[in-house]
Image (cartoon, rainbow, N blue to C red; front, top):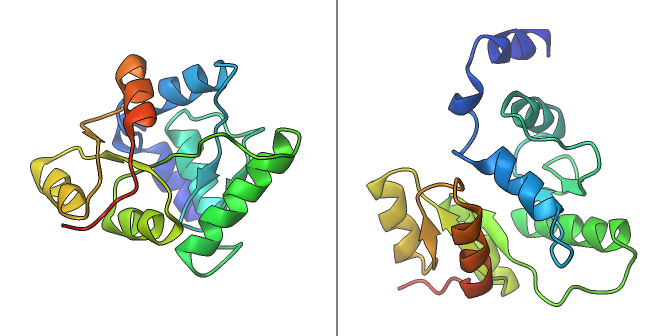
Length: 159
């Protein structure tokens, strides 16, 4: 863990953060009708370290990681459950996942969960689109575009 933290301290935050992610998460947290939770296939400790290095405040966010379940579907379901508990129980009108990998698209398709893709390059965009992800953004720097994408997101259906 110490070596990992040492390595993180030598890397700029923008090397970990999808451009605009920290600011976008804070903006979404301020909207009355939206809630944020994090689900990652990484291990909790390293994920928290990376999020912190990227400037994402995680102190009160519902969170699930590989420590919680082996299958990505399980991780995502645990994150959704923790989000419900964290925000007073009940259910949400709409849940949308934001991800950048084919595994994210497959997981969302399996769970019938809408997804917004984030692709920092053309190859990633093509992979996500071939797995039926729509919309796909180049980054999260424009909160208005992110909100539009969240509202327009559909369940991935591979082409």
